[in-house]
Image (cartoon, rainbow, N blue to C red):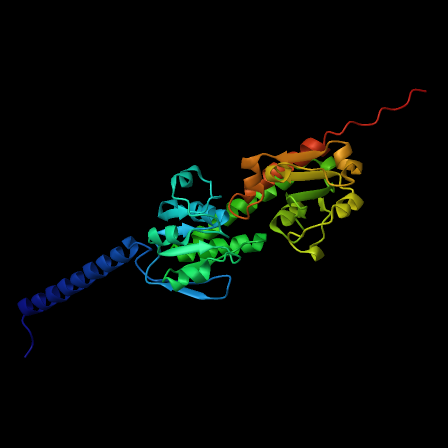
Length: 319
């Protein structure tokens, strides 16, 4: 028996109504997924110890024991998740108001635990990791030493924070572009300058394989400390004397209570006062492997241009 016209209409209307219900349900599901917070799902990262750290959701309470990691969290626009930092974390200004929990090598374990962190981020060299883990605190160790490390740490931190993959790539693109711009700003006469960068008193120098050395290479100058000596080797002062650099860069902390190294008065850079001594704020910028490497490259290029590009030309002898 064939359905009547009325029944056919009713059947069509029923199908249309069912389709509408399905479309509305799908739209609501998609909207809920789009509006869901990125912290609603668990996160899993592998840190620089090679350990996989899993959390049920992205951490909302973070303690950072390394300034470059503090700055990385903030560069990813997640500064508000920090509840405590090490004594050296001072950028951006907002973190200066947070509780200080000691240094990376001498942290106050009780103070850290009292902050009830979801995770503590620290350097590999920190001795606090095992003690905190024994107390049930999640620990992620990350220690950037090269440009590639900085890029990798940005990506790992973004995953830990439950941020989209592109968040870290955007930050890195800004850093990379700014370092290239600093290199372009270097005057032709300043290129191939032989540079010694002292990281701290010792002397400890920045080698070619360090992030500072890589920045100097990108700027187009020559580092007197070869990669074969490691990223930040302790040097014999005589090594610098023999290398006789054209320019010396030093952080402010290197210069505090400085006793001149033997023989340094014979170095070309010292004799001709081609020294860039960074103050506390700029020193923090140039010696931290993190989001402010772009500003560090600008400061170094400015130093090289100021000291090398404007050298007086020799006066021709009168006939």
